[in-house]
Length: 167
Image 1 (cartoon, rainbow, N blue to C red):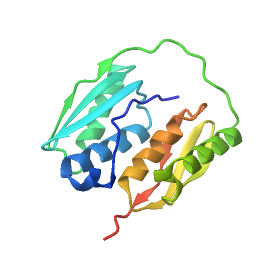
Image 2 (image 1 turned 135 degrees about the horizontal axis):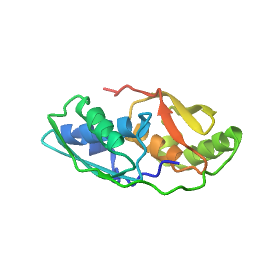
Image 3 (image 1 turned 45 degrees about the vertical axis):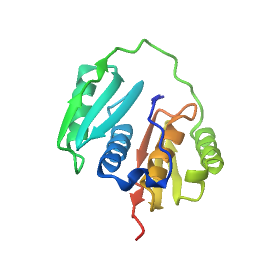
């Protein structure tokens, strides 16, 4: 399971600044990109310059994370300070996809930001959770990925969620 240490998102005004928007879009992209497994991740954005901090198990993943961040709209430059720290062998938690889906849905129901956001668990296949739906909140999208990722047995989170800001 990918464990992520993320910066707290507080209040709906978080995405009101361009740097905050870039930070959240970058986090969602990194968390949902196949082939990037982070044990700790922090994304900071100042004046469009994204700084990546944390640990990844391989140099290839470090490079891929930098490439993903560079493709985000609004990113002027990327400072990739990720550390390559090979992870030791650890036992994967084996749970059925149905158990995982029920656990993610329960976690969504318990989370005030995700509960009525329009984001749903579309499917779970071999521990990979697919999220879908439409939401008007990038914060809810980010939190839904974080909440799903924290569920025991989840190997990766993928998303087809569409963020449509309401105006």
